[in-house]
Length: 157
Image 1 (cartoon, rainbow, N blue to C red):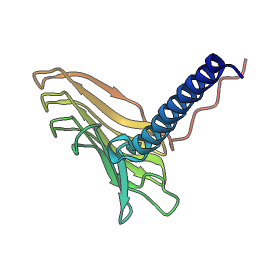
Image 2: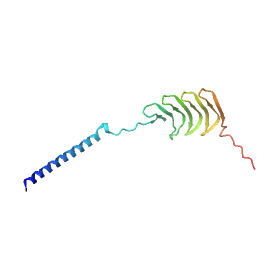
Image 3: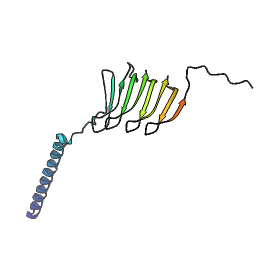
Image 4: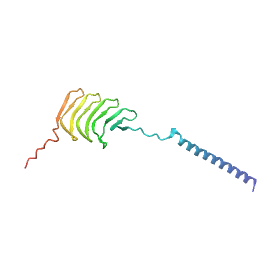
């Protein structure tokens, strides 16, 4: 073998060793970075909880309550459910019975003034519903009657 070839072969082996070390260092660094706490996947915050049969939903990024109300054994709304603005103002309330609107309901303007008030029977609006303007004056009254009232038969033609 010529001396030039031997020197060339040694240079190639040195280059390959350096590349192997570089590749090994990169792999170790990558594996170490993946295992470090600052790179772990952060679980998204839970926006709701159920405690003692009461469902509570929160606004994202903070612990301000958005919805709150009791549930029955089938996890259906049952009882008075409230909805709140991000700054804690109670904006609405509706009564439920096993997942159906059954009872009083109201909605308020963001200022807290009453917007409308009415009643549900078995998920259907019933009785007189009153709507208010932003100053609190009655702007409309509508009578939905009673869903349990008998319906008159259609006239025979």
